[in-house]
Image (cartoon, rainbow, N blue to C red; front, side, top):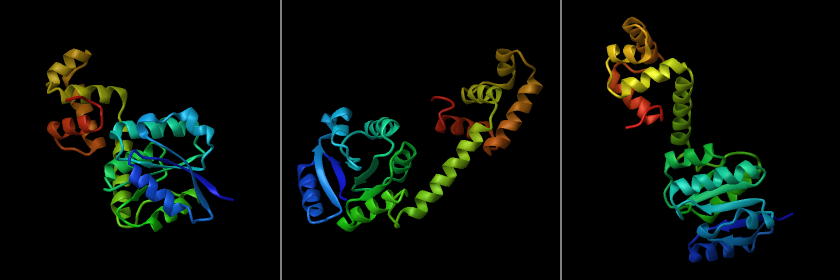
Length: 214
């Protein structure tokens, strides 16, 4: 049975090329194409695709991530593969973490499209072998950092936010109505949990992980 593909791309040349390449294949059929700016989830779902291929360069990264997250929250059974000219590892990690099933480097070959589609229909995430080691390394690192953040208590998060603002222990103690010694103990525990050694590193960590704002 043919797998139904929907293409989302604003480049007519790429759309035409991909449709031509898929046409001779018995297993896959491009049933519809959309421009990203005109995409309508309700119209898209009317076609009941098995997989959506989306050019992740067609719009802002935030809009692409939002689309994937929103769509997959409703239709998790439909696969989504992105493709682009440059494999931005951090961007790719966000795509995967928000429900995407992988990414294809369009600079490689059409064979990668076929390989990637086969992989995701086996319920795997597709990442090109050239970038897989770096992708896995960053995924593990991000998971460790997330665990560090999750290990902080509400009070420790609050104190870390104050530290990020450059407040001294005495000022933090006054703001929270606790002793300076208690603040000092909290900060010591925070440093151990997030694996930093000074207040500057702690502030950078807090900003990087969305605990505090610049």
